[in-house]
Image (cartoon, rainbow, N blue to C red; front, top):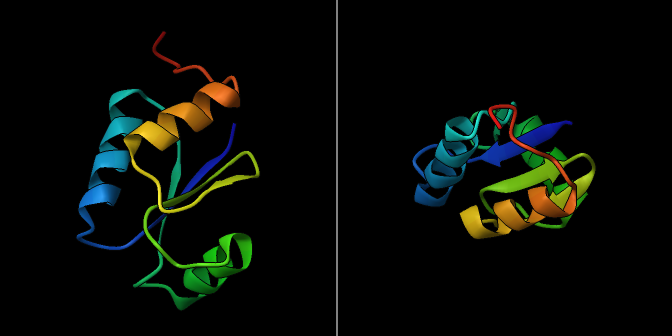
Length: 84
């Protein structure tokens, strides 16, 4: 399982999604698109936009996501929390 979260510092939706992933022990890589322009370009190429948070879950792009969308995408990918 590979989860990349494209974030913007201070974004409340990003904070919620990152907290959800941490609380459920899902390993992920965080890429701040404000601090690193290469990550902004990368997320734009993958999703066609630069909204935050956008996730890449094993190659499935979940743009401009909230916790509900992330939960659904993880369930569809049949990824289970390591703590379960």
